[in-house]
Length: 329
Length: 255
Image 1 (cartoon, each protein chain N blue to C red):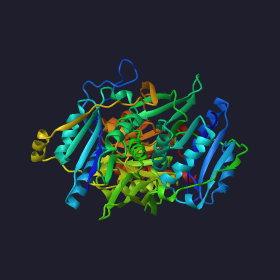
Image 2: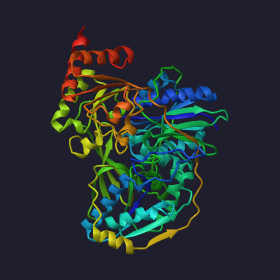
Image 3: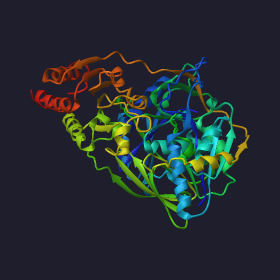
C-alpha cells in the first residue's frame, strides 16, 4: 500500500487552479512519506494536460481518457476512480473541496468503505506515518485535528485558495487506465452548464473580495463595490452578507458566512457589514480584513486589520479613486 | 409522491461553541438546538411535492440523542407525516459515514420516490451524508440543488445545481438523493394547527448498532486570534491614502 494520489479536477479541458493547489500539498505529503505522487486525470481529450500536472509535482499521471468521461457525472467518475484505487492501493487520496469534489469524494469513499475528511485546510504526515488532517468545523469557529487510523486509502478534500501553489517538475509518467463504464449504472445526464452573468472570478477562488451588507441600503448601491472590485483587477470579486442576500439585493451564490460560502481571500473588504457571528465564521480566516462601517462598535472591527469608521458611500468611492490615481504613478 | 427527508439537529448558528474538558468534543450545556438550516429547504421541497402530486407522504429520519425529538416535532409542525429517530447517545463520536450507514439501514426497506438531505450540516460542515447515502442505497444523486422539477411519472427529475461560477442542469433518474441548497424554496412557517398536530404524532424510535467513525477526531482547537487592527477615522482623502498605502506596503495584498 503506497502512493499519494490526487484527483485533478478539470472542466471543459481546463485544469482548475485548485488542482494545482491539491498537487502542491500532495507533493509535500509524498516527500514526507517517502512515497510517489500520482495525479488522476479523467475526461475526454485531456491527455495534453498531463504535462501540466507533471510541472506541479506528479511523478505519475493515471489517465482515463474516454468519450464516456466527457461530462462530469458522479457515477461514471466514481467507478473509474474506485477501479484504479483497488488495482493500485494508494495510501492517500485527495480531492478538491469544490462542488464537484464534494459530490464525488463521499461517493468514492463509501464505495471503498472508508471515511472522508471534507474541506481540509492543512494536511501533514504524522509520526506514525498517518495523514494528519486539520479542518474547520462550525464554519471556522473551531478547528478539528483528525486521523484515519485504519481506513485505507485515507481520503480528504482540500479547501480551495488555502494551499500555495508550487512548481516542482517531475517525470509525470502517463499510465493509461482502461475505461469500462456500464451505461445502465450512470443514472444522471448533463443537460447544460450555464455560466454566471457576472464576469468576475468565483468567490471561492477570488484573491480579493469586496463585500456588502445591510449598510449598502439597496441593490443599486452595490455598483460602488463592483467599481472597487473592477479597479482591484481580475482576481477581485463582490460578495454579500446574509442580510443583503435575504433582502433580495444579491443572489445566494454571493453570500459569505455560515449559510453561504466560507472564503479565505488575501484581502476581504467588508462594507456596511456589522459582523454577526455567522458572517465572521465565513470570512475570519481571510489573510487581511478591512472594515468600513459607520458604527464604531460594530463587531467586524474586532476582526479587521484596518478599519475605517465613517460613511461607506463616501469612503468606498474614495478608495477606488485613490487606487486609480496611485496605481498610475 | 413519497419522500424521505434526512434531518440533523445542530446548534443554532449564533451559538458560541466551547471545547469540552477532554478537548475532543464541544460543551453541549447551554446550546440552543435547531433543525439544520439546509434541511428546512429539504423538508419544504418534499412537502411541496406531496402537495403538487396530491398524494403520498413525507417521512423524516434523523440520527441522534433523545433531544432530536424536538426537531422532528418541529418538522411535523411544518407538515411532515412520519418521523423516525435512530437513537444514538454519543453523536459526537460519529462521522458522516457512520450516520449514512444508519440512515441507509432504516431507509432501505422504505417505499420512496426521492430522498432529500440538506447540502451540508452547519456543525461539522462535512457535506457527505447525502452522497454517501446514495451510494449505499445504489441510487443516483444530485447535490447542492437550487431548483428541482420532478416529472409527472415521478421517474425522473431535472435538477439545477450551483457550481463555481455558474449553474449545472442535470437530469436524474428517480429514486435518487437530492441535497438542498439555499434558494431551492422558501421554507414555510409552522402554523398553530401544525404545532397542535405535531404534539399528537408518534415518533418511531429505532435502536441499531451505530458503526464506529472512520475519521477520528484527536483534538479541537480555536483558530488563532487575529492581531488587533488599526482603526482610522474620517472620510477624507488623507485617511483613504493611508489605508491604500498600508494595503500596498504593509500587507502587500494589492499591487
